[in-house]
Length: 186
Image 1 (tube, helix red, strand yellow):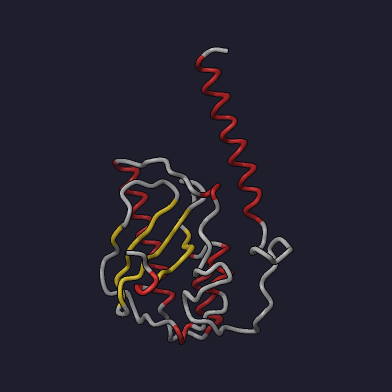
Image 2 (cartoon, helix red, strand yellow):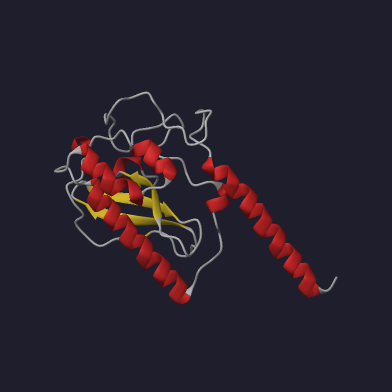
C-alpha cells in the first residue's frame, strides 16, 4: 500500500471505531436494564439540583465516543467557545426560572440537556434551585476543545461550572452537568 492508502485506511478504522462506540450511547442509564428506560422511583420533581446520583455526581460525563481531544485553534476555537458560552448561559437562565411551574420549566430546560443530564435533572423541583439569575458574562474554562467544554457562568448564587458536549462540530452544544460552586474541584 502507498502512504496515502495507509492514511485512508487509518481514517476509516477510526471512523468505524467511532461509529461502533456511538451505538452504545443509546442505552438507558446504568443499571436500568432497558435502553431508554426512565427511572421510575419517583412520581414528580423532588431532588435538589446537582444532587449526587448513584454514580456519586450530578450527571455522568459524556461517553468516550463523545470525548474528542482534537485541538481547536483560531476562528474555529472562537466560534466553538462562543456557541458553548451561549448554550451555557441560556441553560442556566432557564434553570433559574423558579417562577415557572415544573412542567413549563422542564419543557424549556430539557432540550438544552444531554440525555444523561435529562435523566439526572428530571426530578429537580425548580423551587429548590438556588439561582435566581445570571449576573455576569460567561468565561470559557478551557483553551482548546472540539466537542467538550466547560464554561463558568456567574449567578447570584455563585459561579456555576457548566459542562457541555456536542457529538460533532455540526451539532448544538448540550449541557451534561451544571456544577454549583461547592461541588467544583479547585
